[in-house]
Image (cartoon, rainbow, N blue to C red; front, side, top):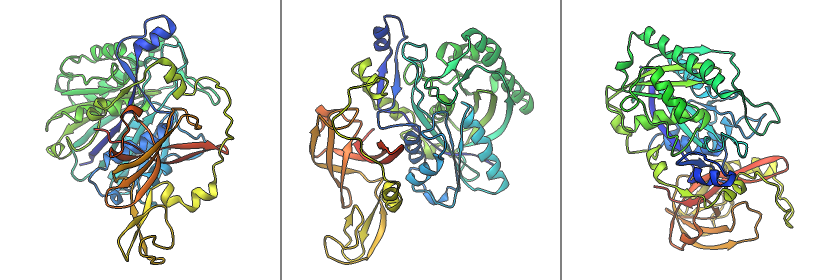
Length: 473
């Protein structure tokens, strides 16, 4: 039977306390905190993180398609899924597709993945959802929004949660929107969109799903559904006659925030991390209509639980931003003084020529002496053998900090810039900028891992590459 065979997630390491938002504007902004993507992160890089987490311990060549859902893509005309595919080192003959413009994109992608597997056009389909939305300063969304990503692998072998059925609704109801050129999301009156949209459309889809599958609310073990913010999410639980204390999965409003397209899938992954075989899970999303799914957890769930960073470990691994000002700096929400260093150009010829290193972080292993080297070259620096190498993926390799330096005047949003020389486990050396770091804890000998990030923007192009960071738990 078709269902979920693996899951992965990503939550940025930074958090912004809502009390700091409130203190900035002299009003209440709620309790808890929200996740904040670093200056070198976007929806694409977070999607890469979730995809790699989902594929931990699995054969990457087994994935036949990748569908990427987001309302905050880095490019309006350039597919993000193809870059995620390359960075995750998946086959280049798979189907890649972006699904945008609606927070319901993740379940749209799930339906397409389910149909592809049932039709036999794909054996395993990766569904990735990620969002990094910017809220207007001093708006109600500033404390509500969060950044994050989720990935679900859909297949028909070793399924951890079967898809028992689904119901889908499309609606022309206009509640939130963002036109080309708009920096911030626009929204209609809160009470109207809540009572005429969310609290009517999503319950209708769930009710029809119950009717279709002949089940009742009390049959649900955990409900994982989208909610714009915690209070409205609780109202939806009551509307669907679910017990908020026992049947509703925590929407992470106090710890992460509303991660847009990724929210419902992240809530689902949180439920799967603690699910037991036989559990019935309601999975539902809302936006321009609604999608509702019923899932049944299988015995295979125990093979995955504890083997992914998922939601739980990412929640525990965090650093709090020291102030609202640092958040504004990371999100580049103000115009700063011009630097004296000219902007660096991006080079499409270089990116294409070195694509195996840029996207996949392939180094080379000498077939004569066995040493690993990066970047690629024709002559081995150890044994002088010529043109006798094989590719080796280094993106999933950890390393040890050999030496470093800090630059307070570099062209970087988050200073100081930490230049790092890393000795890779298994051989090879990597020169990189360290991200997601506490400069007071940087020391020679610390363990580091790779992460796919924005390297720079120039020539109207976003240049991605791999950086190092302290290993997250």
